[in-house]
Length: 291
Ligand code: DON
Image 1 (cartoon, helix red, strand yellow):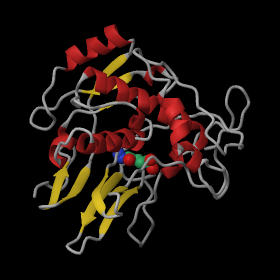
Image 2 (cartoon, protein in one colour):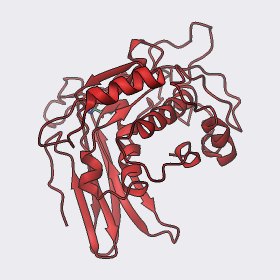
Image 3 (tube, protein in one colour):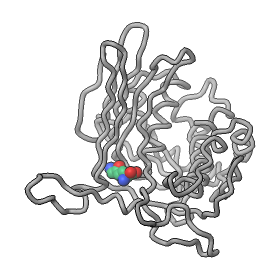
């Protein structure tokens, strides 16, 4: 979102080719740094403030041009000194998210996971709960091909890097404005960011913001480096001409595009002057949105 603050989205719509291009480029830039610098902060000095620094993000946003950037190298946010190198993870299917605002204005955004369905498949005898499979969120190789240590490598007692993004947006007075989050492994980051953009930049209500088809680019150096467009689901996502957007991005902007089904599970509550407005993601089972 910090990169997107430096581009102009005025007078555009969420499915405009220009918006999809700008959002996927911002994601590439964000994932380049996330993959290099984010890991358990008890083990690694994560340059959180540097990664959010407005001047730094302005220089990063300036990388965005007319054409797809291709794989983006990590930047050098202020405050970094720990040796590390990029790596990627895989999505799973064992996560739930809840967004709550009560009548007193208290807010909760909580994502919980055992990583994949049935976790690691081991039930604790006599206690009735499944053990998680979160260790798969580590990078299994400790070093890059250039021999640099990877921040998110396995170490004893260390937490694996999570993409979970339970989010509470506050207004300038510090009051709760919006609560959201989703399951979806590393795609959570894009699902959540795009939905927040849809509300604040494009003025959509929570259900509309969720229903807009997703688009992402997670800056992977593997063949999945493609920009991913969501295959529309009739009656669930907003209908759109995915083939036209695909060819515009490929021919006009140099993107490699993949079209695929995506299974976000967003929930969103917006606090408005006329009360709470909710939205729920019909791509998975769950609650029903409304006013
Ligand atoms: O913590 C993480 O980022 C992942 N283990 C979450 C996995 C997940 O969301 C699976 N659900 N679809």
